[in-house]
Length: 521
Image 1 (spheres, rainbow, N blue to C red):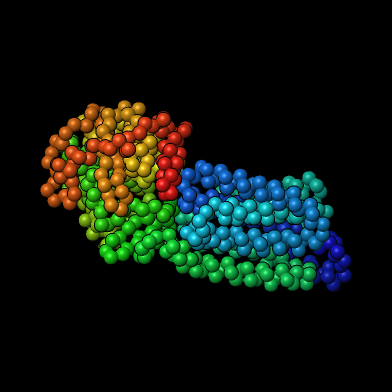
Image 2: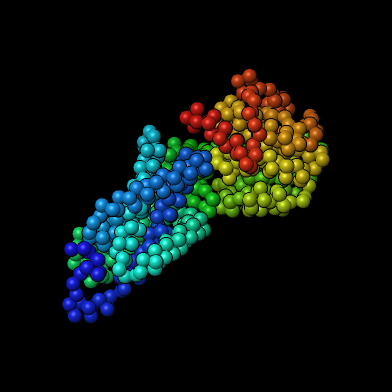
């Protein structure tokens, strides 16, 4: 017997009862909306997590989306073998998708540090989810067949499907990621997904045919609800496996996952799993980043810091009594808030954000620099490594040309430029791109124990000269003698870049990723 409303015999009592039940057609059309929304969110979750854990956002999203769509095609093709009991099969598919998709984010984070090769698990999960989503729409069309004309049926299904896709594309970046988080967000979307199955098995007259499905839907809903409640605990477990030291604080901002670890007095900041600093040796990095530029400008009255939301480069800039104004532009307000308000973090930057000379701006550095008309004597560029294309644009020819417009004629720029030993071509490409933008450059490097040998690039409209002012005597690492040694490179750190980094090629991201991957990093 076909398990559809039109195939079931009706008695007068049944007819009367069904009039009091929700209309099956409307429920199923709304299911199309839910299916489309949840299915796309699962796809976006997989792509985002792959980007966080594997880097190279374009490659990860491209392969995840391609795999997902291919799997949907397989699911649609396979639906031809479902010959009867369409409603039962639809409910079963909904239960499976809710379980697999809803737990996918937590599963991927937990398994990343356990398995040797993460990619087979990632793409297996994407394939399975896509296959099940591909089954849903053909089953819904068969259930609704006979209730609408063919034209109205196709029109209604596609309309709800596309509206659901729009809803997912807005909810994911604007609500789910910034306010719910990836792990809890997966469970929440799974609960939305399972609500369709629950509605069907509990509210329709035919629920007597769906006894096992009713039990399964309740169990899956309970699992997803528990996951949503304990999602922070699950996130902590996965992060504890990822980091060597105990986590003392972790949160998700609109832009990234923020985690602090601490052991024996050493506090470390990780963004999306990537180490940003260690409190034991960050002074080496920040003194080397700031002072070669700051001490070469005779009167650095107006200073710009791009990135550096931890305030540690800011701390160094404020040591110079010649500095009258500092503008700090960092994308993530959560980072600047933490380092401006948390006592342990304020001690690290010496409460730099409280200094009246400081103006903190939370904005995208690319657009801010593009739109700025102010001239700066010194610019400190402290962006993360170019692990994805959204960061790679901040190392591009176009960005450096915009930067050149706001640097004073005698001003200097210092750019964090990654590890010259591990990634010599990427290091060279940053310098070559600055040169192509009209800067005279001088590369240098310093050993930072928590990072290894780290590189920087000094750049100006004129060739950077010698120190114009003495270095502060209270610096912990940098002395005039140590400063001179930073410009000498061993032969194995030198390489030629094949091209410069432009917005339309993003060669730096690909080069950086390939070089670091050779070291298993």
